[in-house]
Image (cartoon, rainbow, N blue to C red; front, side, top):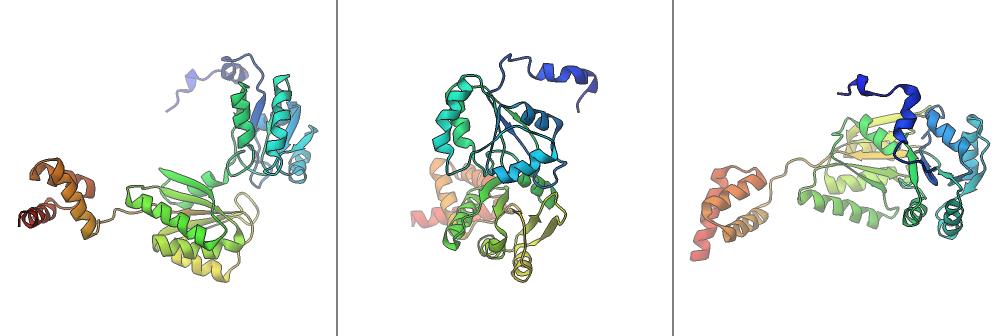
Amino acid sequence: MTDETLLPPDDQADDQIHAGSSRRPALVLVSTPIGNLQDFSVRGVACLREADGILCEDTRTSSRLLAAHGIKTKLIALHEHNEDARTPGLIAAMQKGAQYALISDAGTPLVSDPGYRLTRAAIAAGLLISGVPGANAAILALTLSGLPPHPFLFAGFLPPKATARLAAFAGFRAAEKAGLRATLIFYEAPHRLAASLADAASIFGDRPAAVARELTKLFEEIRRAGLNELAAHYATHEPRGEICLVIGPAGEELPDEADLDDAIRAALRQGSLKDAVAAVMAATGLPRKQIYARALALQSASVG
Protein backbone atom coordinates (compact mmCIF):
# COMPACT_ATOMS: atom_id res chain seq x y z
CA MET A 1 0.00 0.00 0.00
CA THR A 2 1.29 3.46 -0.91
CA ASP A 3 2.09 5.79 1.96
CA GLU A 4 0.65 9.10 0.73
CA THR A 5 2.90 11.01 3.11
CA LEU A 6 5.85 9.95 0.96
CA LEU A 7 4.43 11.40 -2.25
CA PRO A 8 5.72 14.85 -3.33
CA PRO A 9 3.29 17.76 -3.62
CA ASP A 10 1.54 17.98 -7.00
CA ASP A 11 3.59 20.97 -8.10
CA GLN A 12 6.80 19.05 -7.44
CA ALA A 13 5.78 15.72 -8.95
CA ASP A 14 7.01 16.45 -12.49
CA ASP A 15 10.34 17.75 -11.20
CA GLN A 16 10.75 14.53 -9.22
CA ILE A 17 10.02 12.40 -12.24
CA HIS A 18 12.47 14.21 -14.52
CA ALA A 19 15.14 14.95 -11.91
CA GLY A 20 17.34 12.17 -13.29
CA SER A 21 17.78 13.87 -16.66
CA SER A 22 18.06 17.48 -17.80
CA ARG A 23 17.69 16.47 -21.46
CA ARG A 24 14.50 16.99 -23.43
CA PRO A 25 13.21 13.66 -24.79
CA ALA A 26 13.68 13.37 -28.52
CA LEU A 27 10.81 10.93 -28.95
CA VAL A 28 7.76 10.59 -26.72
CA LEU A 29 5.37 7.64 -27.15
CA VAL A 30 1.95 9.04 -26.28
CA SER A 31 -1.04 6.79 -25.61
CA THR A 32 -4.34 8.07 -27.00
CA PRO A 33 -8.00 7.13 -26.37
CA ILE A 34 -9.30 3.88 -27.87
CA GLY A 35 -12.80 5.31 -28.30
CA ASN A 36 -14.01 7.94 -25.88
CA LEU A 37 -12.01 11.10 -26.62
CA GLN A 38 -12.29 12.17 -22.98
CA ASP A 39 -9.95 9.30 -22.02
CA PHE A 40 -6.89 11.41 -22.76
CA SER A 41 -4.52 12.49 -20.01
CA VAL A 42 -3.66 16.11 -19.30
CA ARG A 43 0.03 15.27 -19.80
CA GLY A 44 -0.72 13.60 -23.12
CA VAL A 45 -2.44 16.72 -24.40
CA ALA A 46 0.42 18.92 -23.19
CA CYS A 47 3.00 16.68 -24.84
CA LEU A 48 1.27 16.85 -28.21
CA ARG A 49 1.02 20.62 -27.97
CA GLU A 50 4.70 21.03 -27.11
CA ALA A 51 6.14 18.63 -29.69
CA ASP A 52 7.71 19.88 -32.92
CA GLY A 53 5.68 17.32 -34.83
CA ILE A 54 3.24 14.46 -34.18
CA LEU A 55 3.94 11.17 -35.94
CA CYS A 56 0.71 9.28 -36.58
CA GLU A 57 -0.69 6.36 -38.57
CA ASP A 58 -3.46 8.26 -40.33
CA THR A 59 -3.59 12.06 -40.33
CA ARG A 60 -7.36 12.01 -40.91
CA THR A 61 -7.98 9.93 -37.80
CA SER A 62 -5.54 11.85 -35.62
CA SER A 63 -6.83 15.25 -36.78
CA ARG A 64 -10.14 14.54 -35.04
CA LEU A 65 -8.35 13.91 -31.75
CA LEU A 66 -6.30 17.07 -32.11
CA ALA A 67 -9.37 19.15 -32.98
CA ALA A 68 -11.21 17.83 -29.91
CA HIS A 69 -8.40 19.05 -27.66
CA GLY A 70 -7.43 22.25 -29.50
CA ILE A 71 -4.00 20.95 -30.54
CA LYS A 72 -2.42 22.72 -33.52
CA THR A 73 0.84 20.76 -33.85
CA LYS A 74 1.73 19.52 -37.34
CA LEU A 75 0.81 15.91 -38.13
CA ILE A 76 3.28 13.68 -40.00
CA ALA A 77 2.14 10.35 -41.38
CA LEU A 78 4.20 7.37 -40.17
CA HIS A 79 2.86 3.95 -41.08
CA GLU A 80 4.02 0.51 -42.12
CA HIS A 81 4.53 1.57 -45.74
CA ASN A 82 6.79 4.58 -45.10
CA GLU A 83 8.39 3.97 -41.70
CA ASP A 84 11.66 2.62 -43.09
CA ALA A 85 12.02 5.49 -45.55
CA ARG A 86 11.19 8.22 -43.05
CA THR A 87 13.22 6.94 -40.10
CA PRO A 88 16.69 8.26 -41.15
CA GLY A 89 15.39 11.80 -41.65
CA LEU A 90 13.50 11.76 -38.36
CA ILE A 91 16.54 10.49 -36.49
CA ALA A 92 18.70 13.24 -38.05
CA ALA A 93 16.16 15.89 -37.01
CA MET A 94 16.01 14.55 -33.45
CA GLN A 95 19.80 14.58 -33.26
CA LYS A 96 19.64 18.29 -34.06
CA GLY A 97 17.17 18.92 -31.23
CA ALA A 98 13.72 18.24 -32.65
CA GLN A 99 11.17 16.49 -30.47
CA TYR A 100 8.49 14.25 -31.93
CA ALA A 101 5.45 12.72 -30.28
CA LEU A 102 4.48 9.31 -31.64
CA ILE A 103 0.84 8.22 -31.52
CA SER A 104 -1.19 5.44 -33.10
CA ASP A 105 -4.77 5.68 -34.33
CA ALA A 106 -5.90 4.50 -30.91
CA GLY A 107 -4.32 3.20 -27.73
CA THR A 108 -0.68 2.62 -26.86
CA PRO A 109 1.91 3.11 -29.64
CA LEU A 110 3.81 0.06 -30.93
CA VAL A 111 1.22 -2.42 -29.56
CA SER A 112 0.19 -3.93 -32.92
CA ASP A 113 0.86 -0.49 -34.43
CA PRO A 114 3.73 1.21 -36.33
CA GLY A 115 6.65 2.88 -34.58
CA TYR A 116 8.79 -0.03 -33.43
CA ARG A 117 11.44 0.45 -36.12
CA LEU A 118 11.70 4.18 -35.45
CA THR A 119 11.92 3.57 -31.71
CA ARG A 120 14.68 0.99 -32.16
CA ALA A 121 16.59 3.40 -34.41
CA ALA A 122 16.26 6.16 -31.83
CA ILE A 123 17.58 3.85 -29.11
CA ALA A 124 20.50 2.84 -31.34
CA ALA A 125 21.29 6.52 -31.93
CA GLY A 126 21.45 7.16 -28.19
CA LEU A 127 18.45 9.50 -28.19
CA LEU A 128 16.33 9.97 -25.09
CA ILE A 129 12.89 8.35 -25.33
CA SER A 130 9.98 8.85 -22.96
CA GLY A 131 6.33 7.90 -22.86
CA VAL A 132 2.88 8.95 -21.67
CA PRO A 133 0.84 5.94 -20.52
CA GLY A 134 -2.85 5.57 -21.21
CA ALA A 135 -5.50 3.45 -22.85
CA ASN A 136 -4.86 -0.05 -24.20
CA ALA A 137 -7.63 -2.24 -25.59
CA ALA A 138 -5.98 -5.56 -24.72
CA ILE A 139 -5.55 -4.68 -21.04
CA LEU A 140 -9.06 -3.27 -20.72
CA ALA A 141 -10.52 -6.37 -22.40
CA LEU A 142 -8.58 -8.58 -19.99
CA THR A 143 -9.81 -6.74 -16.91
CA LEU A 144 -13.43 -6.80 -18.11
CA SER A 145 -13.40 -10.43 -19.25
CA GLY A 146 -13.73 -11.98 -15.81
CA LEU A 147 -10.93 -14.39 -16.72
CA PRO A 148 -7.71 -14.80 -14.69
CA PRO A 149 -5.81 -11.50 -15.13
CA HIS A 150 -2.32 -12.90 -14.71
CA PRO A 151 -0.31 -14.31 -16.17
CA PHE A 152 -1.58 -13.28 -19.57
CA LEU A 153 -0.16 -13.52 -23.08
CA PHE A 154 -1.00 -10.87 -25.67
CA ALA A 155 -0.46 -12.08 -29.24
CA GLY A 156 -1.73 -9.19 -31.35
CA PHE A 157 -3.81 -9.79 -34.48
CA LEU A 158 -4.67 -13.34 -35.47
CA PRO A 159 -3.59 -14.50 -38.96
CA PRO A 160 -6.32 -13.77 -41.53
CA LYS A 161 -6.06 -17.15 -43.27
CA ALA A 162 -7.68 -20.17 -41.62
CA THR A 163 -4.67 -22.46 -42.06
CA ALA A 164 -2.27 -20.00 -40.45
CA ARG A 165 -4.77 -19.20 -37.72
CA LEU A 166 -5.21 -22.87 -36.81
CA ALA A 167 -1.43 -23.28 -36.79
CA ALA A 168 -1.11 -20.32 -34.42
CA PHE A 169 -3.71 -21.76 -32.05
CA ALA A 170 -2.00 -25.16 -32.25
CA GLY A 171 1.29 -23.53 -31.28
CA PHE A 172 -0.27 -22.03 -28.16
CA ARG A 173 -1.89 -25.38 -27.36
CA ALA A 174 1.49 -27.11 -27.64
CA ALA A 175 2.95 -24.53 -25.26
CA GLU A 176 0.13 -25.26 -22.83
CA LYS A 177 0.92 -28.96 -22.94
CA ALA A 178 4.49 -28.00 -22.05
CA GLY A 179 3.29 -26.02 -19.04
CA LEU A 180 1.98 -22.61 -20.20
CA ARG A 181 -0.92 -21.44 -18.03
CA ALA A 182 -1.92 -17.98 -19.25
CA THR A 183 -4.99 -16.11 -20.38
CA LEU A 184 -4.62 -15.47 -24.11
CA ILE A 185 -5.52 -12.14 -25.74
CA PHE A 186 -5.91 -11.51 -29.47
CA TYR A 187 -7.14 -8.73 -31.73
CA GLU A 188 -9.50 -9.77 -34.50
CA ALA A 189 -11.42 -8.22 -37.38
CA PRO A 190 -15.22 -8.39 -37.07
CA HIS A 191 -15.78 -10.30 -40.32
CA ARG A 192 -13.44 -13.08 -39.16
CA LEU A 193 -14.59 -13.33 -35.53
CA ALA A 194 -17.05 -16.24 -35.91
CA ALA A 195 -14.53 -18.32 -37.87
CA SER A 196 -11.75 -17.56 -35.39
CA LEU A 197 -13.94 -18.56 -32.44
CA ALA A 198 -14.81 -21.84 -34.16
CA ASP A 199 -11.13 -22.48 -34.92
CA ALA A 200 -10.21 -21.71 -31.32
CA ALA A 201 -12.86 -24.14 -30.05
CA SER A 202 -11.51 -26.86 -32.33
CA ILE A 203 -8.04 -26.50 -30.78
CA PHE A 204 -8.71 -25.48 -27.18
CA GLY A 205 -12.09 -27.14 -26.61
CA ASP A 206 -15.07 -25.33 -25.13
CA ARG A 207 -12.98 -23.12 -22.89
CA PRO A 208 -14.26 -19.99 -21.10
CA ALA A 209 -13.69 -16.89 -23.19
CA ALA A 210 -14.86 -13.34 -23.75
CA VAL A 211 -15.36 -11.06 -26.71
CA ALA A 212 -14.82 -7.36 -25.97
CA ARG A 213 -16.18 -5.11 -28.70
CA GLU A 214 -16.14 -1.34 -29.21
CA LEU A 215 -14.47 -0.68 -25.86
CA THR A 216 -15.21 2.76 -24.32
CA LYS A 217 -17.55 3.57 -27.23
CA LEU A 218 -21.33 4.00 -27.33
CA PHE A 219 -22.06 0.37 -28.27
CA GLU A 220 -19.50 -1.29 -25.99
CA GLU A 221 -20.18 -5.00 -25.55
CA ILE A 222 -18.56 -7.66 -23.36
CA ARG A 223 -19.89 -11.14 -24.05
CA ARG A 224 -18.64 -13.92 -21.77
CA ALA A 225 -19.27 -17.61 -22.52
CA GLY A 226 -17.63 -20.79 -23.73
CA LEU A 227 -15.92 -20.73 -27.13
CA ASN A 228 -18.63 -22.87 -28.73
CA GLU A 229 -21.44 -20.60 -27.54
CA LEU A 230 -19.58 -17.50 -28.65
CA ALA A 231 -18.87 -19.02 -32.07
CA ALA A 232 -22.54 -19.91 -32.50
CA HIS A 233 -23.69 -16.44 -31.44
CA TYR A 234 -21.43 -14.50 -33.78
CA ALA A 235 -22.15 -16.89 -36.66
CA THR A 236 -25.70 -15.47 -36.64
CA HIS A 237 -25.04 -11.98 -35.20
CA GLU A 238 -22.48 -10.20 -37.33
CA PRO A 239 -20.34 -7.98 -35.09
CA ARG A 240 -19.01 -4.54 -35.89
CA GLY A 241 -16.15 -2.43 -34.65
CA GLU A 242 -12.85 -3.12 -32.91
CA ILE A 243 -12.67 -6.54 -31.23
CA CYS A 244 -10.54 -8.23 -28.58
CA LEU A 245 -10.80 -11.97 -28.03
CA VAL A 246 -9.81 -13.23 -24.58
CA ILE A 247 -9.44 -16.99 -23.98
CA GLY A 248 -9.09 -18.46 -20.51
CA PRO A 249 -5.99 -20.45 -19.51
CA ALA A 250 -5.66 -24.19 -19.76
CA GLY A 251 -6.71 -26.18 -16.72
CA GLU A 252 -4.61 -28.80 -15.02
CA GLU A 253 -4.44 -31.69 -17.46
CA LEU A 254 -3.65 -35.31 -16.87
CA PRO A 255 -0.90 -36.61 -19.13
CA ASP A 256 -1.84 -39.44 -21.46
CA GLU A 257 -0.42 -42.87 -20.77
CA ALA A 258 2.45 -42.60 -23.25
CA ASP A 259 3.52 -39.20 -21.86
CA LEU A 260 3.41 -40.56 -18.32
CA ASP A 261 5.53 -43.56 -19.25
CA ASP A 262 8.09 -41.30 -20.94
CA ALA A 263 8.25 -39.09 -17.86
CA ILE A 264 8.76 -42.06 -15.54
CA ARG A 265 11.46 -43.61 -17.73
CA ALA A 266 13.32 -40.30 -17.89
CA ALA A 267 13.12 -39.93 -14.11
CA LEU A 268 14.29 -43.51 -13.52
CA ARG A 269 17.37 -42.84 -15.63
CA GLN A 270 18.27 -39.97 -13.30
CA GLY A 271 17.90 -41.72 -9.94
CA SER A 272 16.27 -44.28 -7.70
CA LEU A 273 12.70 -45.54 -7.91
CA LYS A 274 11.76 -43.45 -4.87
CA ASP A 275 13.27 -40.28 -6.32
CA ALA A 276 11.72 -40.93 -9.75
CA VAL A 277 8.25 -41.37 -8.28
CA ALA A 278 8.61 -38.18 -6.24
CA ALA A 279 9.78 -36.19 -9.29
CA VAL A 280 6.97 -37.38 -11.56
CA MET A 281 4.39 -36.84 -8.80
CA ALA A 282 5.58 -33.24 -8.40
CA ALA A 283 5.49 -32.64 -12.16
CA THR A 284 2.07 -34.17 -12.86
CA GLY A 285 0.12 -33.94 -9.60
CA LEU A 286 -0.92 -37.57 -9.99
CA PRO A 287 -1.29 -39.82 -6.91
CA ARG A 288 1.92 -41.45 -5.65
CA LYS A 289 0.29 -44.86 -5.68
CA GLN A 290 -0.55 -44.62 -9.39
CA ILE A 291 2.93 -43.47 -10.38
CA TYR A 292 4.65 -46.05 -8.15
CA ALA A 293 2.63 -48.91 -9.64
CA ARG A 294 3.38 -47.78 -13.18
CA ALA A 295 7.07 -47.33 -12.42
CA LEU A 296 7.30 -50.87 -11.03
CA ALA A 297 5.59 -52.21 -14.16
CA LEU A 298 8.03 -50.38 -16.41
CA GLN A 299 11.02 -51.62 -14.41
CA SER A 300 9.75 -55.22 -14.62
CA ALA A 301 9.19 -54.94 -18.35
CA SER A 302 12.70 -53.61 -18.91
CA VAL A 303 14.24 -56.43 -16.86
CA GLY A 304 12.13 -59.07 -18.62
